[in-house]
Image (cartoon, rainbow, N blue to C red; front, side):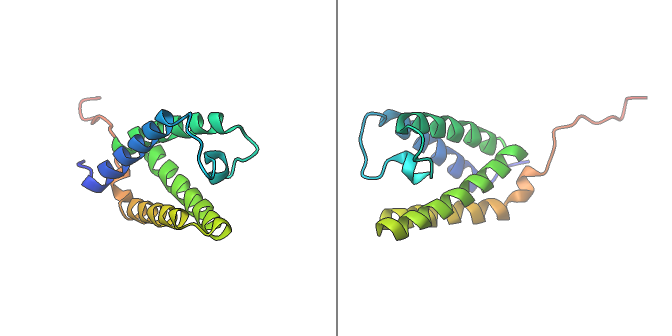
Length: 129
């Protein structure tokens, strides 16, 4: 089954974001990434590395139309939507509102394209007798 260009764009966008996150490990931000994802009790460096690896694995599965990656993307987008809205209200920062809009867009697009993730690669059993 051929995947939509949107699925490819979302997957590569998340891979790009993960790489940028890894390349900026030493750069301090106004709101650290561990606070942005609701893990303020964990060290920022560990959270950055974990999020980067998670996004790369999830994105590769998403691009390859894996069902587990579909559900990972839905859960991740929903979680990031809630966190971004919470941060937008707490910090009064439009950047978090933009993140919420992006997460909502990915969530909606992913849900409406679920049918691309419902096929399986099984061999026909025509000659099994």
